Figure 1 (cartoon, rainbow, N blue to C red):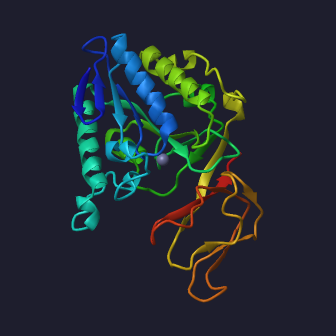
Figure 2 (figure 1 turned 45 degrees about the horizontal axis):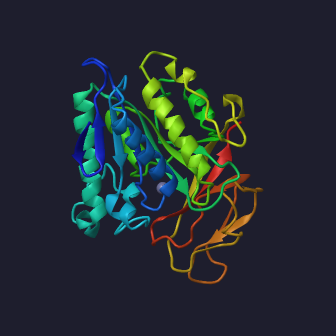
Figure 3 (figure 1 turned 90 degrees about the horizontal axis):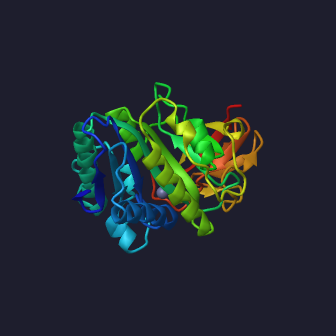
Length: 314
Ligand SMILES: [Zn+2]
């Protein structure tokens, strides 16, 4: 094991020709303690037992400064700073911008050292509860993923797949675009999720990195994910696409529905959803079709995403 830079750990594969590597990251947002604890447990196990992994692994704790203070970020949201040179912007000197460049370099070194990056799981947890507790977001992609991921994600209790339609400077979009990895942002539960699920998550991750040989179909032989209340199968995974991204334009922005509702709440076509204008009643947005809400947060900075509206695909 080598620590390439602060809290970025490289584990070589069993053989020199172990093939493309796998990346697991957490703590891009420093207050998402569930996935951070699960990855810390994985790191502890791999170190203590000197586990020889079949494939190279890069295990990343995304934002050490924010993790130390158990806060989402120090200066800026790190998950908006990947793959984008923000030259001349005040963000470029922020703790998060420097960290984004450092992580990008670590990814490039990893890709070079082990002939590419096969897949990347970027683990997060949501601020508010979700009607579908665990779900995966796919970056904008022009190709189908190489593996039958649904089975492996289903074993982790992932109940929904959300296809993004607008590029954002997220870590998973970066690893997909730059290294052609099968990348996911995996929401592992809400901040309030029971601690026992962190243990289950750690066990699932362990199975994933220790069993992954690179052989076609190996993901189908992963161990069961033990402590999920509603074990999902791939047939129960619901697919959504992002129909609209809500961007906060003015100080007056507010939701016209109950903002504290859980993620994936359903709203019929025609619902007056938010208003964003200086005059009362100005800039009211009505849903053009049935939609499911995700990540609603009216308190973001101007110009930032205040939520997503999803369309169900099947
Ligand atoms: Zn997050």
